Amino acid sequence: MSGKLHEQIHHPTRLAIVAFLSGCMEAEFKAVQEYCGASAATLSKLVTALESAGYVQVRKGYFGRRPRTWLSLTPDGRKALQEHLAALNALVDTSVEQGRRHETAATAPDA
Image (cartoon, rainbow, N blue to C red; front, side, top):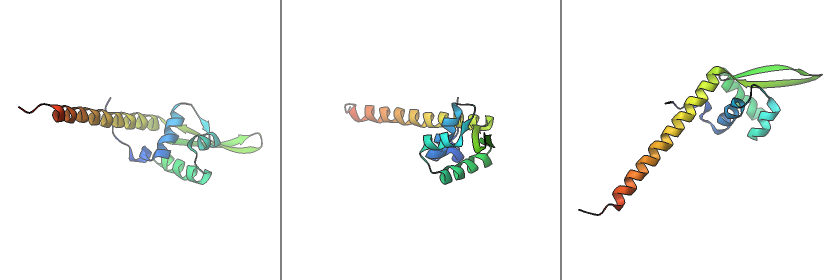
């Protein structure tokens, strides 16, 4: 599977958000915040950007009398994450292969 880098999820915290959400159907905002180690304001801005890109869905409601926000990854978000990870893996594979070629060339005896 080939992929492409997605600028919208390339930021480390955005990538952490979509990676976390890829492992569940839905997560409470606070759980994602704790996982990412981000402030509520920062996470809110990043989630808004991901929502605008169509990668994250935000659902607001109540748990008892307390307001809650739940986040989920959209099908487009799942696809973007898979493509992004495939592109990163391809970069690593290419880099490793080029490193091996340079190492082999550097250690080859002169003719």
